Image 1 (cartoon, one colour):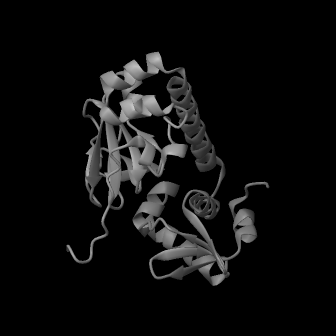
Image 2 (spheres, rainbow, N blue to C red):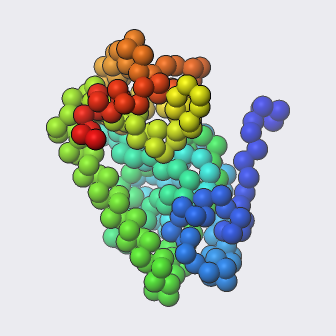
Length: 241
């Protein structure tokens, strides 16, 4: 509805982008940033719209200016598994560009999001000419691999309660806002999405979330989750720090 929808800004210039300091172009000089701006297309994706679909060929990469994007894979039985979440400053689709493979997952906007698309040929040219971009991409790929390895390790060694607690702590780091009584998670995930992220059934996820609420570790405020006792949550997550 026009009167109720939030206006999502289009950032035509990279220098004006709110995620500039978090992205792969953050070390480029003004002149180079201006060139990137000329070669990108800024799109507004409404909640539920897809950026790209698993099995399609890659034509470029996507850089998230604002909003949240889920990256998911579909099983042969039609079950969706969320493999990661992308937010401000993150890039999506880069692995398919450099491996010359079709997209291995689907990217979907979890809320109205501003996302820039940069053509594959220009990205490859930029990587050749700008060492800082190449280094940023290598770092990004390394972090993605590390996150995937940590997730695999977590799934194999931890029970569901520990994985739920760890997910809430990760969301606190990426989407938490400190308030008087705790950390409010600004990213509103459905129970089905949370269950997919920790690899369990929705009913099981709901049971463990209810237990955390009963023990005063978290609370539900509307559609938001607020972490009330971070130390207790760390203990439940079995993080060892």
